[in-house]
Image (tube, rainbow, N blue to C red):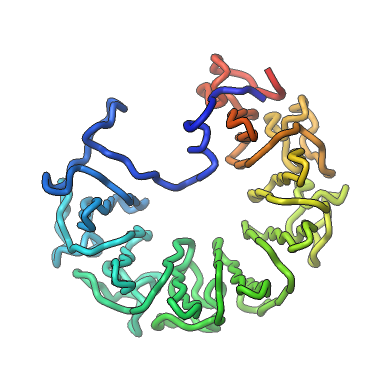
Length: 366
């Protein structure tokens, strides 16, 4: 692995797939600037984009601007005409999520609005999948937190968790039907929710974890849970006592039990764990003493054990000490230490690991 950054910049990779607040007027990235209204001070506090070629930005004063292809009314300006410049849609907005063909908007008063196509039920209304809303429509009130993901989820101020829409309505939301419906309450007293394709999970304040898989597999409940994560047919649960459990697909040894055999029940892998990270084929855990362990797919040296020929590491291997956080990307791993140093290792295509080269794999400390 390779140390490439020090200090505050190292914190960026610990927040994978999130956009930090950016003052676009002062940016020096040399890219095309997207400017909103001058009275907003060019300060963007939230941004999102979709594969269907639309963008959305929330400015510091709460104005929502949208632009892009707009085939299904995703921009929300009551047309389906493409918008090549940011168009102000509404005010008092806190956050926005761009879905594949729709938009979900959280306002500062806790209300949620949706617009665009109902193809995946993301509008949160009782309607057929070919329904379109060309302007934002209110569907919920009193929301504390909106949680983006494969489906739509919101935790109300009283702790009630509601979900709607998604890639597979019955699988992800636990509604048991592929008919588009308004948001449905799943549990009370919720503190966290995650979804990934055909799986989802909800954690309550009392440490109860509810997991939904594909519709035919129903629901499972686990207790005394501190944190959890869900990937494609792969689950991880960290208990309050520091025990880490993994189960599901194991073709690359990502469960860490010394085999490549799929596990249909939770398998305890490690103790004394304070944080973990998984992707679909690789796992990492940081213990209380700051030691980082990794296991799973290793075709490009992304495990960091100095070997890129041992393609499946089926048991946890200690990689380094003094780790604070770890992020797993496709064939690349990033680690931030307690000294705020950033290390990267794995596939170095186009110089991604920052070691001054553009070929080969970065397999260990350099």
